[in-house]
Amino acid sequence: MSDASLNKLVERIRSCTACSHALPLGPRPVLHVSPRARLLIASQAPGTKVHETGISFNDASGDRLRQWLGMDRDTFYDTENVALVPMGFCYPGRLSKGGDCPPRPECAPLWREKVLSELQDIQLTLLVGSYAQNYALGPGKVSDRVAHFREYLPRYFPLPHPSWRTGAWEKRNPWFGAEVLPALRKEISRILGN
Image (spheres, rainbow, N blue to C red):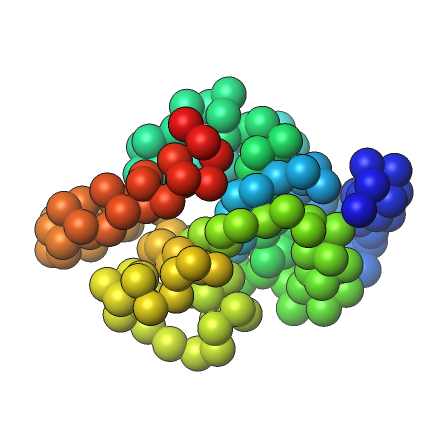
């Protein structure tokens, strides 16, 4: 696939207003892609800080995710290596009991397969959180998938969402830091050649 083809698609996505009626801050689609990317990070949807800056994972969740990956910001945002493609491209709003709303259901059917078809060099997809995992793998439990990550290799690597709530989960599941993260970093090193 070509830069021109992907750039044209990204331009169309960034002008999308399909679910603007339901977006509390209005549409601002956020994704970072290149046809040469080898690692795909499939996540949930932008939060408020990402909406404000237009930069994926430009928040505490991003700091935690980069720490898990053993990756600095420059590498993380280098689209020649890493594509950042959430399930929903716009900030979906807040739930009444706290936390962000699910990604808008219009987004993935409209755009996801079009974007993925342009990313022909992807060697590994990190499925970050339940929405990305359920889309790619069908219904299931995040903890079970993360614990059995080897079953999904070499195509996918399931991860929990790196929100602040995950800190308590990590403490209850020390196997994540002891087994999963070293394997994750090894896979990333293999893919990106670091």
